[in-house]
Structure formats: C-alpha cells, structure tokens
Length: 335
Image 1 (tube, helix red, strand yellow):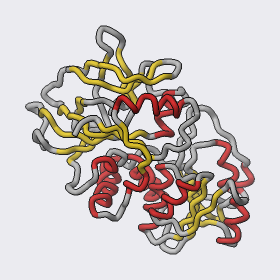
Image 2 (cartoon, helix red, strand yellow):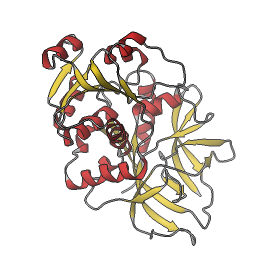
Image 3 (tube, one colour):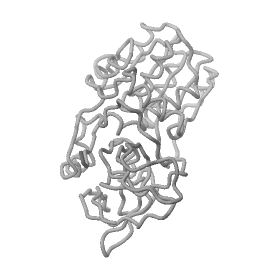
Image 4 (spheres, one colour):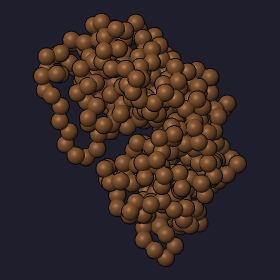
C-alpha cells in the first residue's frame, strides 16, 4: 500500500518520502490521515538519539486524526467514513529499500492500525477541531501526571516549563481548582498558559523564578511539575517545593543517568511521582471530550499549520536549534 511519510535519516535530516505500508490483515483498520501533531520534545529526542526506539530511518509521530478507509473482517467497532484518533502505524519501508522504524509512525498520509493495541485508535468525538485534536497526546500526558500526583483544590501548583505537556498540566490543575503558577523563559508560552488557566506567570528570563515564587507563595509550592525534560532543571525545581510537598518528574529526561542534590529533596521530605505515557484510553478520551465541549481550548497552543512538504524543513530547522517559535505544530495531510 503506497503512502507518503516524513522520514528521518541519520544525520539527522528529515525528508518527505514515498513509502510502502504492509497490506492490511483481517484484524487491521486502514486510516487516511487528516492531520498529525508534532511533539517537539520527544520527537526531536528520538531523531537526535537521546531516546532510542529503533534504528534509522525513522518515522516519528504518535498522535494523529484520520478517516477510516477500510475495516478488516475481524476488526469490529468501526466503519468506513468514521473519524478516529490514533497513536500507531504498523510498519513501513522505503520502496526497494530498508524498513523504516515506526516510532510510532503517524506522520504519514495513511496508517494501518491494529485496534486491539493499547496505542491503537478510538472514535473522535463530534465537534472537535481536527488540528487541535491531532495534538491530543500531549494534554493527555499532562493529565496522567496530574491524576497520579492528585493536587487538591486550593493547593499551590508550580508548572516548571510550559511546553505542550506543561500546558496540559496547567489546564488539568486549573480544572481541579488549584492555584497554578506557570514558569518559563518564553513570554508567548506563558501567555498561552494564562489562556489555559494559569493564575500567575513567572518569566525566568526577567526575574529570579525562585525568589518570585517565594513572594507569591511564602511556603513554596504544594506540588511542582517539572516539565522541561532538562536534567539541569531538576534541582532548581525541587527547591520550589514546600516541606512535605510533592515533586513530579513530568518531563522525559532521556536514557542517560541524571543526578540531583540529594539533600534538596531529602530535607524537604518530598513525595515524588514518575508519570509515563499518556494514561492510555481514559486520559485520551477525557482531553478530547474537554476539547469538544470547549473546556480545553487546545487550539490556543497551535503556532504552525503545515502541508507535508513544509513539515520537513520545519523539523530540520528545529533539529538545528532554530525552532524557538514552535509550540504546537500540525501537519495537514488531506481534507
């Protein structure tokens, strides 16, 4: 089955390539992609081999929305024409060439999906904006961490780094009635955090973030979500917790060992949580329901909407360290 895909070669460099997908089996569903969302942190880490899920060449992307084209005889619960969201693509290879590692391969014009997998697919709720929905996994990741840490109404929460995952945390904590303090180095991201429910904004380029937090919350934060994925941010974020507070390793810190100042956490007697993935079906369904109802205005996060031919240059610019203007990026594959 023919398709086009964004393929990352060793270098790394990304190209829009023709690819071949496996012929679907009786348990598969074939999807025509409408839009796929770019996850800047995880996808760049995969391309740069900070995280390794498979060898080059790679097709990244783990969140997309599409239309069901074909349903295998043994695949139940879906019909052609339904709009779905999904996190997987079975396999692909370059024509006459090597296999492409699908990690998870949703940046492609088509997908062949096993609906029984935990990262399979589900029906898209009515009324959801397709572009916003294609970025659904990131707020689900944030919601999963919030559900694990369980911040309570009225508690002071710090979200340290408001990229897409951090913004998902901001929204989820705001929905719980927490007092949310968003910290970042980028003024636009902080503006989006405000739109998603942050009560206080702290720009670390302009002020000493810890000192400003002490002014806002003299006892410091009940819960700190460290969302940057940068090991260098761990100790400063831990120092923002109150005694007997909670610290959430919400970012992905890669495969290499990380270190922290033991006494910073020890003397505060902290509880720590280590969320992983997006909470699976319940979290995905919750954030898409909130998008459909207008409770989660996730379209506020979108900075770039691209045709596939423009997506490879953008990803290459991001790989070169020139993507500071990119927050939410959506690739539109078909109407």
